[in-house]
Length: 322
Ligand SMILES: *Cc1c(COP(=O)(O)O)cnc(C)c1O
Image (cartoon, rainbow, N blue to C red):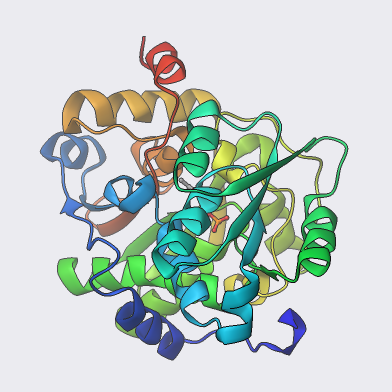
C-alpha cells in the first residue's frame, strides 16, 4: 500500500499544517545571546522539546492518522519505534479515538516506555540487535488488520514533520542555513521541502551521530547505505538506514550531512540546561552541537537550528549534566 504513495511536496506540508492546527503546539523560536556571541552568527532555535509528548514526532503521527478512512480507523494503527514516534502514535490514536499497538525495543528508555503506556498504547517488545522491527510490524499489521505508520518513511509523516521548518521560517524570516538532526530522515526531508519553498537560497544541512553516519555515506554514494545499529546516546537517531521516501528528497535538497560525537552532544545538553533553562534529550542536541562546535560554520549568518525533543530519563539526564 505504501508503494502506491507519491513523494510528498511542499503542498503536502501546507495541508499537514492545516490538519495539525489547534492540535499540535506552535512551539517557540528562542535565541541565546551567549550562543550567538560564541559562534558569531544569529541562531534561531525551533524548540520542539516543548511540543506535545515532548518531540516533533507528534506532527507527523497526527497528520498520518488524520488521513485514515473509516476502515483504517476501525482497524487501528500499529508502529515500531525506539520511543518518541511510539508516544506520538499512541497520543494521536487516543485523540482520534482509535486503537494503537507499538513494537518497541526491549532497551528503550524507561521514560519513553512508560509515557507510551500512559497514552494507552499496547506495547510489543523486540530485540533491536537480533530482530527486524519492520518485519514484526508488518506481520502484526496483517494479523490484526491494523495500518502500519512507520516512524519516518511515509509521505504523511514527512509532510507533518515539515511543518516544523515552515513555522520556523514564517516566524524568523528567511535563513542562510537550516540545520536539522537526522535519524531516518523524516524531519530533515520534510523541513527541506519547507525551506526550499519558503527560503529558496537557504542551505540545508543534516546532522547525525558520529557512530551512525549512514546518511552521510548514503549521500556520498548516491544510494541508501545500511549500517549496523549504532551505539550512541542519541537514541532517536540510532537508525541504520534512510527511507525510500526520505532519501530521494534529501538527495535533491540537502547540501551535506555532518556528524557530531556523544561528548559534543553532552556539552550542548549542558549549555541548554544552564543557559537556556531547557531539558533537551541527546538526539535533540545534534543540530545545535554541530553549530556550537563549528562543524557547521555560522559566522555572520542567520541560522535555523531545530531542537527536536526533550524526552530523557531524569536519572540519565542527571548523569549527563553532572
Ligand atoms: C525521531 C527523532 C529524531 C530523528 O528523526 P527522523 O525523522 O528519524 O530523522 C530526532 N530527534 C528526536 C528527538 C526524535 O524523536
